[in-house]
Amino acid sequence: MEQEFDSGLLESAVTELSRLPGIGRKTALRLALHLLRQDKSVGEALGESIVNLCDGIKYCSKCHNISEDELCPICANPLRDHHTVCVVESVKDVMAIENTRQYQGVYHVLGGLISPIDGVGPDQLQIDSLVERIKSGGEVEEVIMALSATMEGETTGFYIYRRLGDTNVKVTQLARGLAVGNDLEYTDEITLGRSLAGRTLFSESV
Amino acid sequence: MEQEFDSGLLESAVTELSRLPGIGRKTALRLALHLLRQDKSVGEALGESIVNLCDGIKYCSKCHNISEDELCPICANPLRDHHTVCVVESVKDVMAIENTRQYQGVYHVLGGLISPIDGVGPDQLQIDSLVERIKSGGEVEEVIMALSATMEGETTGFYIYRRLGDTNVKVTQLARGLAVGNDLEYTDEITLGRSLAGRTLFSESV
Image (tube, rainbow over all chains, first blue to last red; front, side, top):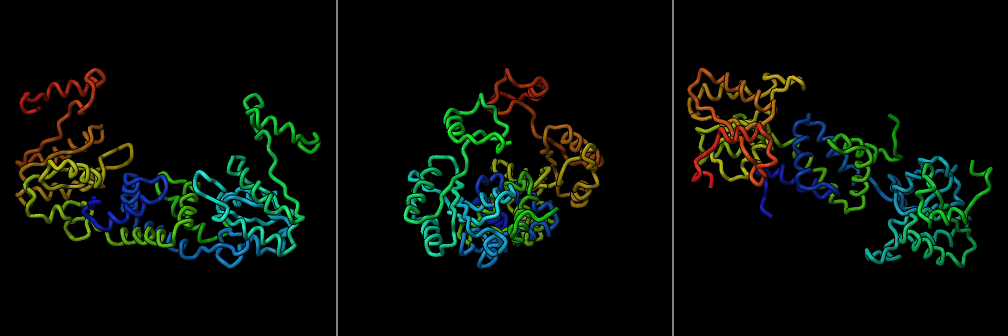
């Protein structure tokens, strides 16, 4: 493509910014010109923090969560329950579950879900390392599938469940049911059916 | 504020990204995690291009357009018509006019418009330098006000027009009229009135 701007510096900043998801060349230009209107230090801090992020972040060798060290802070924490492994799609899901402050176990980040339509097979995900982690250590007692309630999530969960068939680890999954705050009237029938099948004793759910 | 993420690197990248206009902490996190999923070089190129942009871009000492040198490529170009100065609000307007490929003159970037409501007065804009540029050189024959057809644009244009009252420079402004492609039926009456008052010979407008 022909260079759009007189300034090569602007051209390259706009090109790099527009590689970000959801940011086109128009938005990238707006962001670049915004940075130019600010004090120099604002843009420098931004640029450096991005370089540092990409240079400094590694992945935990055990659970594949992002980490600055060999092990992530969760895997390295002896106070966490290392007998329970929560299997999630991505780093964001780890953050979401941590934010509930209800979970004391550790994680295993798959890095995606099986999706034939997007050409993602089990080999591209951290499934082998999960199976090995469970088979080798003998430390893990429960695997919680905390995957999306979508076709891809269910497929991935089922695949992992089958792969773990010859271990005696307990495999559980997140409860399906009414989202808190949702009207029963507007809940789809599949969810309603599953929430009925998985009903719990009243005292528990209060 | 309490640190939200375990990783200080992630925390600082998210904080810096969320200073950009239209980008909150959620989007900033999405962008940071996207960068982490890419090859390291993508994020490094982005970060470095931003640092280089903020370090390397200066403003043209004559027209205040962005520039990598003392003079911007337009002011430095002897083939441009230096007798005609187009007064614009921002660097983006220079780009928009350049994209029409209809203008051969030079520019003067005000860096904003007079807006009492936002506390922007004439002193914060490059108006003194415009007046001086016109009065000192004697080279400028026409000043084209290419400002938005808004209250602020009209006020700024009128203010500059008054300041240039004692020079014999010709002051013109962009034509007001129907936007090309617009239905007459849905054009507001002020625009319609001004397009009628400023009507041109039919042969010209074909």
